[in-house]
Amino acid sequence: MNVLVIGGSGREHVIAWKLAQSDRIDEVIAAPGSDAIAQMMDCRVEDIKEDEHEKLVELALREDIELAVIGPEAPLVEGLTDKLQAAGVPVFGPSKAAAQLEGSKQFAKDIMKKYNIPTASFKSFTDLSEAKKHVEASRIPIVIKADGLAAGKGVTVAETKEEAFAALERMMEEKVFGDAGDSVVIEECLQGEELSYMAFVHGKTVVPMVTAQDHKRAFEGDTGPNTGGMGAYSPVPHINDLFLKQAETEILRPMAEAMVEENTPFTGILYAGLMITDEGPKVIEFNVRFGDPEAQVILPRLESDLVDVMLQVLNDQEVELSWSAEACAGVVLASEGYPESYEKGKAFTMPMTRSDEKQQFFHAGTKVNSESVGWKTNGGRVLLLASQAPTLEEALNMTYQVLDQKEWDGLFYRKDIGYRTLKA
Image (cartoon, rainbow, N blue to C red; front, side):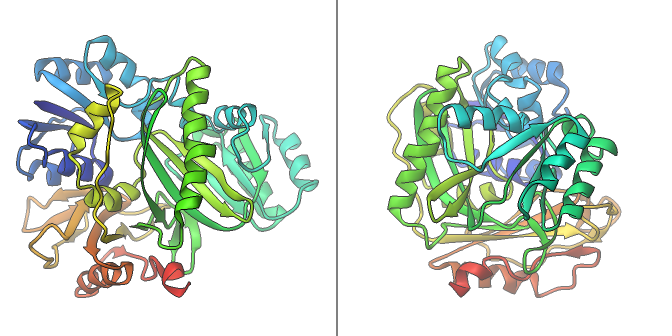
């Protein structure tokens, strides 16, 4: 069968890589894909952007696509699933209505409130002065979130009221996130460790994956601005089965059931960003697709056939996931200046890695260097190196041994991914 992967970042690289391992696959077609995806066995790319919906539908029909997997959030929120399904293409991804779980923070918060899904207390605002008044009367630290999509950068954890006011002004007055900041959600700051918990979902069918933890801040010691994620690892060692059962029964399943009740049934990857609090798991955010970089450390651990899993979930069949007991750790290489302004087109070559599939570079923002050997940077997050080993410490050591063996001119990476867990 032919499968279509929509997107071209590191997340779509690992999705295409995993799908291509299936015995069912004739070809994985990625649009727009990347030069790295184009170099893989049984994969090719088509230069069609994620927002060119009509062209993507035409491609799916022309290539007899039997399964489409949409990687990024934007085409989901814009309704690409609905258009592909209307043309008869099976899609593993939510409808436009269901994708509002990520497309609007307020939509997600309102559903959580209505169905008693544990989350931080919150208020929504469309008026800057009212929002500032609320901050003035609130305890610090406080969390300011742009309501709409902001590529993972629309959240500020304000340690002072001045910082909160500045974040509100950037979102609502200066429009740094465009329309996404017309409305903001202000919520209490939950304390604890964060956890990413994802599941394959179709209606009331919920199949949880293994856990992961990502590192949002740009710099060591969890300092600097929020990013799309600078590294991740799986599993999260100090999480017990009781906690995961609680997260499944109080958060993942109730949300899937709530979406059915609301006549917006959810299909695809339901991602719960959780805070581990003294009162149990609480939701920080919901996303409607694989986390990036979490996918790059979770999918290498999946021993089941990903095509089979997605088709079984779509058909409400019994699904048993098989996972490697090994840990997987991934570290992101990003362009100097990310997540603010950065240059593209910096040339680099790849270091030596293990020849087996225990270690893999996933490309997020790269292009083949047509003038020389190697690659050029083509984005903020450039690469992620994922390594698998019996323990998290060994997996991290494997990753850093490769990254530390060369100078990365114009690129940087955090040297402390997983440090909190190793300290614990």
